[in-house]
Length: 284
Image (cartoon, rainbow, N blue to C red; front, side):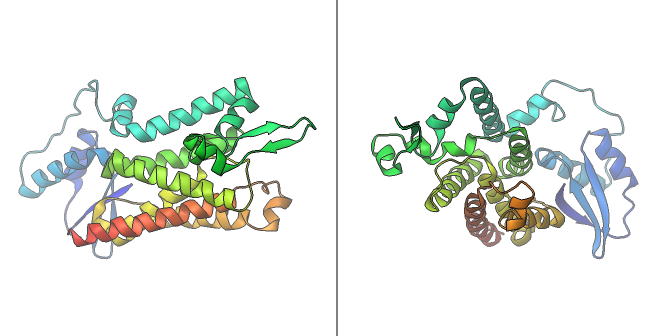
């Protein structure tokens, strides 16, 4: 849910609620110390909500009947995908790579790993050099490990957070901002993991942690920006990151985690979040 505006504590919002639901605008109103806080489920409906609230505040007639569902309605999946094309395309590419790994196996991993991988004549893993790979034009390797996922659970959880946070960023601030975070966090997380001597790793989790840090700072430092993340979710994700860094994680089967990529992505997200939230504060 996304925080939209504060309404008077003594306002009768029953008519407003009926009108918002009639317009198919998902929302919630919570009682706060300073008044009634209006929340929005889909940021793409922000303008529609503001229009309805404005009419309610002016005492104008409000819609009371549910409009017919039309092609392109915000409730349709196609409409949602059109609102966040980069997030949807990134998610789709991860699924495509995962399917390709199931068909072609290690060939896909060797192509998308941060450095060229192969099998030496002695039967051992041959690891190439990142510098040589980049010099030969294989610049995609800086980002491509983010699209590798090693198992269904790895894929599902990373796609869940990518959709949750990426959709907020792209719907509220556009595809260019989302692309900036994706490239900066993806490359930053991969380089952080490679810097500790790991050549075989993958996953979108570094980008996910960057999006977490970005959305959290935007919601805290620029509350009028429309971003929202439950504090318990922030605590859970940061707690999980710290847990996977301990020996206890390995004891229960979570030892092979790209911790440096998580941390590197989070740092990138916090830096970008601090910069853009500061800029939003100055523009108010």
